[in-house]
Picture 1 (cartoon, rainbow, N blue to C red):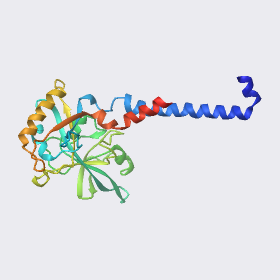
Picture 2: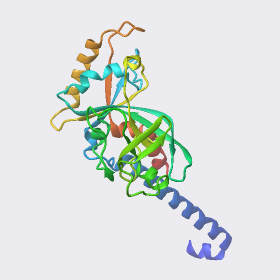
Picture 3: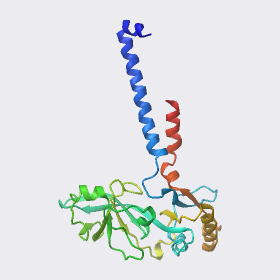
Picture 4: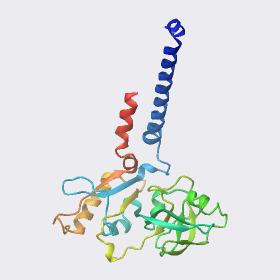
Length: 260
């Protein structure tokens, strides 16, 4: 075979190029599969974090919850170390260069950084019962918008809805739930109680089990009473955070990996 390739250099070049492309594609797909499917999430004890969703009438998860679903979870639920809601919107930050940057903002409830338990690069996350006002910025925002200002903590920065003091900078790479440039505290009044637009994340205590939590959620659903639209009790489901992050990408990556 080698002699044949030597005698036919054009064909040999095609074969070598094809093998190189195939090898490169295989390595690339394996890298994606490794990063997406096999490596643990970069949060301490990430296997204890679950995503809470409502179930639709047909039993499928809707992906979002309403603030009225959460009070019982906040009241020292025996299974939970922390629970939080998050809501995405477009925001705006004025940087050190006096330029307005349009960026992704998440409004979150006060236990958000407790759920993910990620050590801050600077300062702190939000504390329980803290009044609305402080902001936590991402490492990328601190670096790119504020030129890695070493005195950023305590400094008031201008956002789309006023001036807020910075209390923390997240570690490099943390922008959860996705492309977050900064996080602000939400104050959820009565007018938001039934608005089903919120992501919900829960951290289980070390001794808690998912089946035990789901039993408590079933009780919570009954306590909330029937939904106005269906007349049926609210039903919840939980999903491990890794499954939620991977989503439908997992089968796609494995299919591509198997095809190489």
